[in-house]
Structure formats: C-alpha cells, structure tokens
Length: 382
Image (spheres, rainbow, N blue to C red):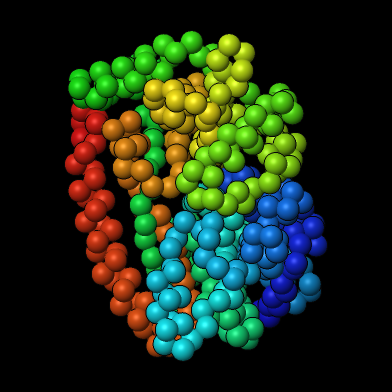
C-alpha cells in the first residue's frame, strides 16, 4: 500500500497555484486558487471572521502533491449554511467542547462542488480519496477537535467520505435547468398559463420604473461599479444578518483573478446605480451569489437575480442557474428543489451516535419536503 502524508497550511499561498488548480479542475470556480486567495488576500477569511485557513495537502512517499482540500478552522458555525448549532449546544450542555472544529468548505458560499480535490494524473483516485478522508479525520482527532464537516460536497465526495465512516446529511436548494431554450419566451412557453402570466407581469412591473439594466463581466466592471455594489451588499447584510464577512476589496480582487467568470448585473435610475446582483460562472453553470438594493422597486430582486440570470444562461448556453440557499418562492419562477449534501466526522462516539440518529429522521423529512415542493412546479409537464 502507498504511504501518504497530510500537511495543513495557514495560507493558500503556501501551495503552488498551478498544482492546486490541477487538483481542483476547471469546472468549479469556488475551489480555484483564485477564489480562495481573493478571500484570504482581501481579509474576508482570517481572525476577523473566524474562518482560519488550514488547507490540507496530501503527498505521496516522494513528496508529490496528490490531493488537496479547502480546509478551515472554525470557532463558530456562521457563514456555513448547513446548521449544526443545535449539535454544539447539546454537546456543550453534556459537558463537551464543540468548538473549535474543522470545515472542508468554501466560506460564505452555499455552492455544491468538489471537496476532495485529486490530481487527475493519479492512477487510483478512489484509493486516494479514501486516504484523504481518513487523513482529515485523523488530523481532527489528533488535534483534539470535536468534528470535521465537509459541506456542499458532490454526491461522489459524499459517497467517498461515507465509505470512510463519515455521516451523510442532506438539504434542499433551488436551481433552474436549461432545457435547450432558444430565449426567455421559449422558457415561458414551458410554464403553465397562469405562471407564465405572473412572470410576465413581474418583469413588466420591474421594467416600468424607468430603470436601465446592464450586465458586465470581469475587467469591464469598473471601480465605481464595485463601490456601488459593496454599498448595496452592506445594506442587505445589515438588514438580514448584521455581519458583512466579505470586505470591499474582495469583489474587485475576485474580478481581477477570475476575469469574465465574474458577472455583475446592475440597475440604474436616472444614471444612478440602485441595485446589483453578483454572479460567478463556471463549468456551464451561473451561480447567483450576492445582491443588494437601495430604495423600493417592485419585483427588482426577481428581475435581477432570477430572470436576467435565466436570460444570461440561455444566451451563453449554460446548463443551469444556481440561485443560492433557501427560498421556496423561487419555485414559481422556474427554480426547482434539488438535494444538497454534506458529510460529518464526529470524534466523540456518543455525539456521533446521537447525530446519526438525528440525521436518519432529518433525511426522511428532507425527502418528504422535496416531494411536496415538486408538486408546486410551474412547468406544464410537471
């Protein structure tokens, strides 16, 4: 059997960007060296936000990098979108210490993607994935942490981690899928008559306020655009969560490193920006990430975040739009429920058994909810 060694790194810059990206692949921009380094270099991760980089690197006996994983130390459960606070509360009431913990994830990004990033040149990826899963769990145990969690992982990574003894968990998210639509009207024709009328009315009302819409990508997004966007982002965060994790520097840095994959959709009134929606494109997918608005504009959120995202996806031949976490209202706008996945290694056997029992009942509830939500589909062939 080959021998592997795992090292943890306090900065993404300790790992060569070309080697990291070779392991990460080119389909998912969120696990790219560019995205993760933009988070770090902008101060969006670190002591201020409680996401401490500890990126994992697995090497073979020659010292060659065979796999990597985006890993963070956490002293809380914020910015994850997979909620384990009740686990923490129960464990600490029983005398345990839940924090700190490890998180294999992309901070502040409820986006499904690979978490065990394996060099495609490796001849036996399944063996390597199992070695990485076991090494991550061993690092958690040897450091005395309560747990390690891989959130928003792919089905493949979830299966690999479960085979290594981790626990599987499920959630729901809403996505729009492109059925080879020619244009937005072609998409509307797939909806029931009542839903089609509703969407047309919402678009008409949003566009009847004298707004001008623009879509810019990468280096075409100006510093003025980013300043306005960050103002909107802060305003939305203040209203909903009260903690702006992403710094103002993050967004232009992201555009500089990801280029045309960064898509900013804006709305102006009399030449003044009033709203914007940030999207990231990769692997045939448009990911809706952050949005913000000043003033009251009917249906502008739907227009910028959902309908224009659909138009962009159709025009660019993208397979789907992922509109982020939560929001049953998305169903009526063509975004249907899909499963999200996470996996969890808990060091304490008593905590593990309690969580395992909880996850069984939660999984049944999630599957029942998905079935119920699918009956609300606006599509004529549902």
